[in-house]
Length: 437
Image 1 (tube, one colour):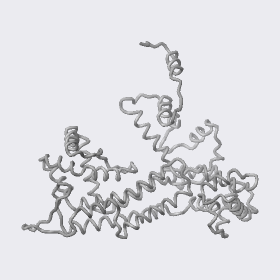
Image 2: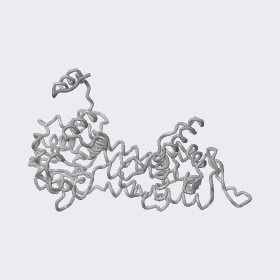
Image 3: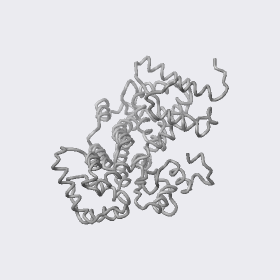
Image 4: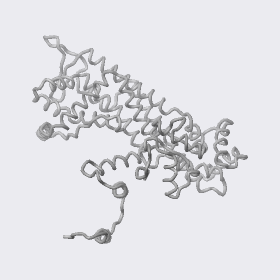
């Protein structure tokens, strides 16, 4: 709707234009509880960012940087700090382009996979704007490795000879199997962070669980894929009569060496440490996250209540013009009530949903719970909308009007349970004169 209205600078996103759209939908900006952004300067800038300007109208708005974006930035940044992993990503993208830009090469791959009865998957491109692309690219190489090498062997061009040399080394295989275990942990976390019903109270437990798994890998305990790899390769390096080290892996000759193994181990260990450090830095509790964290603690019956905790909540509730005179007593009474109700071992989210129904008994707690249940922490739905828009409005359908595009996106993204096709056809046919065959 915003794009359909005139604006001198859509990138800057005029605040008045945004308010007009909100008003046209029958919404009140003063009842806005929170906003999740991708962290761009135009959104979170301290002087003229949209969040800053919205808070000037409604100081109670709580802002969060999309958790899926933060996870992707932390993961990508970890690899970009290690020279070999930068080269490794370039190798994966070269493999992708080799098959994506040539139907002939792709047909060769499929033909060889049929002969070898190999259940392959399509190669993926690593992109900084796609959250799970690194994991997809590594998994594709893992599943197609033997047939990939066979296809490249048949290509005698110098460029492909260099690519073949790069992927038939213990260093490349070591990193591929090691990264497949690390990225699988991050991939699962990313998918959890992209769910529609995720709340702020779920963010930290999921994050800490994943970091604990990464710490286990960093301590030297191999993941399932890397353990399998270690069992398939020789534990000792054996030199031939020419002083060269090699071994057979999946019917392919692999170059080996002490230096290659050492470099691969160093690169992989640095990557895990960098990922852990980046995640801790990206998900540091500061700004509005401090308020959200304290609001969540209200519904954690095992957390301790202190003066700082209460004061932080009181300061926020004063912005909402909610009576906070007996806030500490109401929190204690609510917790005692939850324990007396014997709700069992339930989550913070479930307790929050329970509190939303007790407005007559605990008005302040009820108001907090309703805001927590509605404050967004991710922009995954918005990103899916952009992806769907690019699929629908492509180079062959670039003249679609805005209203038509919006309707097609609603039909594509939403789940239409029942649709009277006969009624829809009659409406379409009666809209103007048509030649109906």
